[in-house]
Length: 582
Image (cartoon, rainbow, N blue to C red; front, top):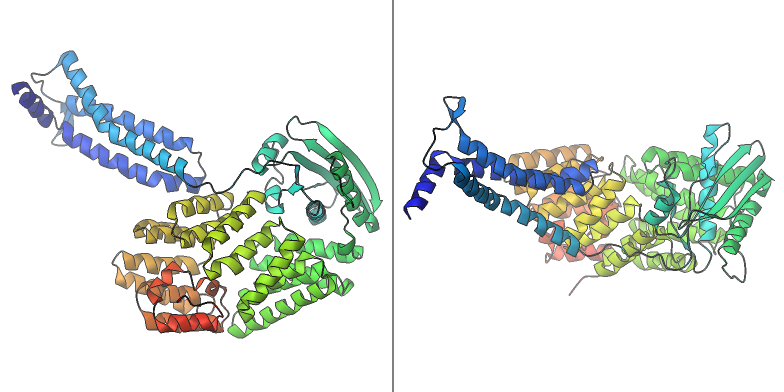
């Protein structure tokens, strides 16, 4: 007993406990911030292991330094010796250091166990024949011709996707490897495919040379290769030849080889269509405007070219989405709907027009049944298209509150297109709306790892922390959005939860002043979260008049949950043709 009292007194005299508590607080603070930093900088998971090992190893150092040294009057000096010393002191200090480090180690293993037990977001679908079509390399002297090689790659991919029982990796994922000198087997493993089609395109005037090779990813051997020298007028026939050769090399038995017959047009229109696709995939307003101009040139050259009309519909919709006034938005959306309907009339057996009309008609007409019919038709024509699965989840399933079905559709899309940031973002948003915050964060972080510069995803991610009682962390995540609407809305939400009413109002006032047309739904979200129902319903009605796309989530939005039960909420759902729960 006396020895224990003596030891305790010696430890107090040397301020060992104070040093351990201070270091422990710092260690746990580091552990709380290291994970978001890792995700933001794309560090591997092993970094967390190194950080934990380093922090745990710091406890013995802190104990030793506290035992040996002290700080007096701002100077570091050796502590006066006591009764406890030598090997016995070393053994006791080692035990203390191990006990102090154990919470850090326990936290780490609990964290890893939680990550291991998190629900799987995708399934590894490597069974059956599968292929990835990598972007064909542009070998033309004019590097501006790259849109042609990219477009040809995408058309080949779409052609092969028509082959029954052949799993084809989606465009977004395959194009993620463009310009990267990565091993074919590694690419195949990431895309869950057994074979890879790669090659090059050289275009000069009306002459093209296409070289392709089909590679078995397991051993790297060529299953087939060929070079085609053709005139530009024969480009569709070459696509069909390549697809037929791939089918033959994979030993797939078909009644009919895939054909591009229904997608054919004159070479000049096809060139403009491919250019439009290139611009559209830039996924920003300027890209959408350039895509619209190219698609319009395509239909001017061939007014019956259905894929280009479908392209006009989607480009027109997204250009209108950033319109300066409600009237401009409405006019652009009406043009988008008319273009989609023309695409269907000209190409009733193509999925393009049905996907476009199913996507654009909801915020224009709030016609959910029609959108469902269009997207179901698109799925029947192209069952494994991740874009259609994505749209079906976003526009048909999630708005109706069918969150489990929406998540299943998005998981399938993510499996088919594992490097598609938009799909991962939508999956995360759906899981978040279903209050599965941990799984939602995993999907949202995956989206940001693939594409760090996004607008919606940081808002969804920040809101998972807001709803989980971590408003300070939510605020830091909101700041990552590239669209100023979302950081302002996020700051107004987070500051309110932090008890900073003036700061919350300042952010909201800024949002209202700068984005009354494009941010109406987010303004309503802030008012609803703060419990200001009258103002929330006022801005929801403005969003409805402005055809704000955010309203597709009005039935399931957790930020609007304080409005549920108010008769005005049910009335809003009816105006949007959404079912009202009893």
